[in-house]
Length: 282
Figure 1 (cartoon, rainbow, N blue to C red):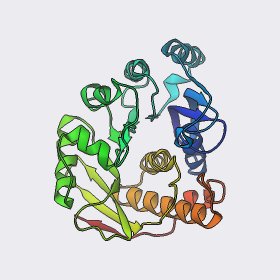
Figure 2: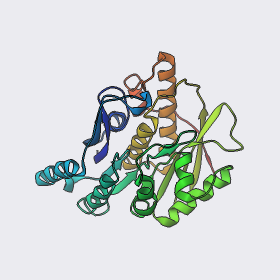
Figure 3: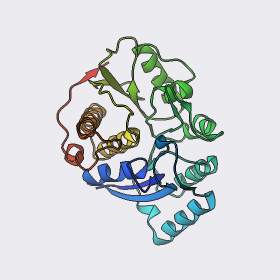
């Protein structure tokens, strides 16, 4: 069991941010200490919501309280996602200096997606590229985000592999490209690519299910599962295999239920005991 500090968004209804990350990590046997960067009624995919983005001072106050309890000194990993405000990004960098030396930081650089472009406040994409990459241990971008971070378009599998290698040169030991579609990807499938600074690269392929609209929060759940498996000691290929298997099972159960929100409760056993999924060594 590992101790994880998760700094992400929170919604009262549905499953994104910390609501999508906490249960998977707990089902993998880890303890999660949660700090919410926002509290919204629901995720922004509904196009209307209520609530507020928490100030940097609010986040600092929560961290100070945790530090006074000695909780920060017990952390094994830091998990971050949607920030809400660029100032919170700088707080996260300062948090790393308050955590034990060697604490792994999984940074999910939430900022945009194919077809939507950027959907975060100005300054957040620059923060991820100019500040976060040099400090993060693991990053989990989608294809749009990896293209921005690496400064190159991804049209082929080799483009994706090269983009990951460019990111490794900046800092992160591990890159998980959470949604990959290239010129060799069939219309009915989607892929994940896991890459390590040591040169290992693995590809997982699953069927591409059709949603209208697609549920939000899958990236948050993916990042949590991947971190959980890495912290449990799984090698990169197994962490990829288990993560991709669980996410596909989650999508299947969500589609079968006809839900707008991820069917997290129904899929929880798939988080803890994912079905075997073959991965390709590149």
